[in-house]
Amino acid sequence: MMTELTLDKGNRLVLTSAVRKAAGIPQRQKLRAHVSPGRIVLEVPASVTGKVVRRGKLKVWTGKVPATPIEDAVERARHYTR
Image (cartoon, rainbow, N blue to C red):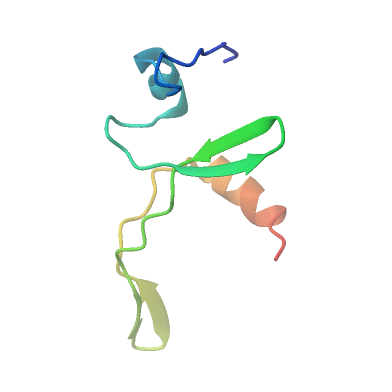
C-alpha cells in the first residue's frame, strides 16, 4: 500500500485506520521510529514477555508466538544474518 500522509497543525503525523489496518497495527500500539535524513521508518517493537526454559533435553520458548505464516517464517530464517 502506498499513501501520502500530511502533518497536522501541531506537526504530528496521524496514521489513518486504513494505514494501520494494512500494516496490522492495533490502536494505541507503541511504535519504534528510526530516523535518517529524508526518511522515517516506524516499526512495532517485539514483545519479549516469555523466556527459554529447559524441558528434558529440549529448550522451549514460554512466551507468545507471533502469528506469522510458516512460509514467511521459513523465508526469513533462510535469509537471517547477524
